Length: 265
Length: 265
View 1: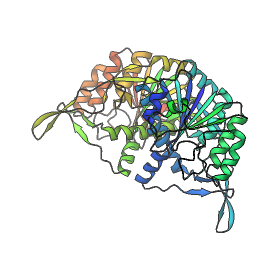
View 2: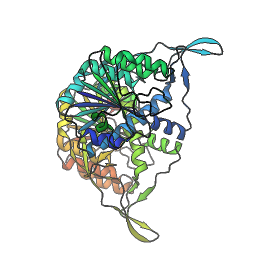
View 3: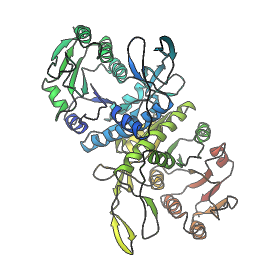
View 4: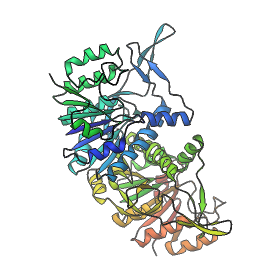
């Protein structure tokens, strides 16, 4: 099993990725973002998502009701169906699923995010949470019948309300279930960079224990990505590949050794 | 099997419909519209869909690339996922699917629509077509495992491009496959009306042969609906119920004999 995580930036070459994937012989699951599509839609409808920064330094979009609607439209709607369309054009028998469909992904709603506001700490509770359970029955049903799941947020909370969650957490959950031999991240950079401002500072190979070091050097910019990758390894052995989703052949390049490879210790 | 077609108007009581459906014992498939959501979104992003009227008098939205994107967002995204969310809140194990997912619905792209323009006839070819084939394998897989499919446009054309199609045509296709004993239409009216301007002119019962008469009396306003219902009957015996989707208990009211019932001859 290979888990393919496709970033949601607008310079990601979806066609190139899907065309390459059609040549894979391993079974795979796709999980994708759509932040560029969401931001473009938000701008068009003149909605400015609120960005909050927690006291521990994580920045994220405040997931209010409007953001969930934008997610349904941009992630589960436009981007998911465009990817499914491309898949079928390339012979990949894709079925698009949000975390809501068949309760594919259940999460525990966040208790709240502590933020600093005018020097004071206060707690904001939004529609976001951490995924903790998959509908394995539905995934196995589809995988067993030869379908390729193409997954996006939103997911369900404990009360069956749609909430936002991090794709890296969903990747970890999928890996916990399917023990993927390989996990591919397609991003808008050549791979993990020693200096985020310099695309030539690519780190080709490292082991999971060296991630913290890279993170410190990058001044906290990769915090969430690093935590996500560490979590993946905590669920079982795998190899994580971070490749340039903007290139002509994003998957083939990873298979040819380009980008960053992170392996177990 | 019951086929439930939910109209896409903004006065449709989705919660009431889904709550009622949770009490049904028959298996069912939901197919829904989202024209109000689409129109609201189009207005917000300041896109005015072009309306064309064919020489034979049918009016429809010209399905250009932008309309397909709006459909992915409003139909397969927002409305589909809101319905799926409501279903799970009421204990219905719903899986949302567009016609693209697993190539659920394949259509034949329309050759073009003949329109009158400044006294001349010209042909406009848009991204729309007639559904002719279902992925029965995928539907049976889900139905057999206890999932309720919640279906929306777009669908695929012969070249695997996303196209628009009429929900009534999809209902007919589903009936051809599953021979539904009953088909429920939830609309923004008490049922089929003798006089479209008078909600008290409800026609309670009629047979399929009497539809043309009603249509003539209504001055062509039900043209597409009537053709759709006639097509359904041509695929096999059934009973079609048209109920008020705006009411407190849209499905229960149908079961209690409210609305319009159309039966075979």
